[in-house]
Length: 386
Image (cartoon, rainbow, N blue to C red; front, side, top):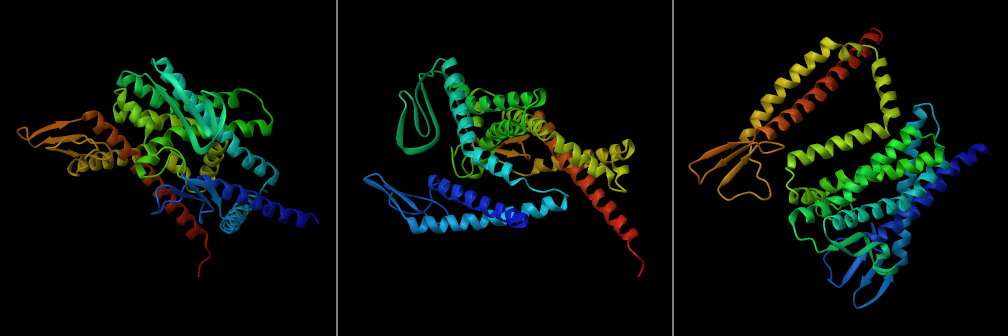
């Protein structure tokens, strides 16, 4: 009986998760060539059709197929998770797993509300006036109401008269969720909470952690803020540019804040992974001071050489000047002006960031290579002779 109950739990979880995901795709527009007034929602098959000149149509057979698709995908995901956890000598607490899944949508909307409030607060502080706010199907301001059109989040602030004011308003949404994520991290580190409360705060904090980096990165890759939902322009980056913050400085701040939050939220996992790694026989020498300095020196030499080599690779920014050529990667550090007596401008701050970037890449590659060789050597040594 206990075995049957254990097997039914992942099946029940897959049914619940598949149903939630299928309904959630009803908010995701399916890109296709169609009449502009008509929009199709749902994935992999559209099951909701809206028409500006008519009522919304629900295609129930397509919805049933989508539900079956997501149930099967969820069941496969649970099976893979169960195998991975079993190999670690543990079992999955499906009750807490379903509890966490049930919190994703409401907590996501809470952090979405925090994001839009950030726009309103920073925009108002910069001299603007909030005129409209909407979360999902709910109009928050100027009057509470239910709207027929879904919007993940939208805040309209009028009366901003300067580029800086417009920039701080645009950046304010993700900045506020990032600050909220740090505050939640401090609470988790300093206050003793029950497991459910701790899980709730951690999920909420993770939404705030991902808000800023995803909003900067994904729209530049042609995706929405949350892959399928949200804005399709890098709003925080645009806001930072309007405020006069250089791209390298802003990217550095985003990376440092994200890494800091990841280490804060996943510190137990990081510590356990570190202990597991250092226990592997033959790897202790990698982390000794002499070996560490050797790898660091090798990575520094390779990083400098590659950074200088990228000075010959053209990498024009979006707002490039006609008659100028831009070189360097990931950031441009050499600018050649063809129309001005072939002058060359060197941006040494960008070059320094590029060097640090490539040093980090090579250091990780060297350590990973050394680790693989050490593990392979141990297996070969321990294997019986033919």
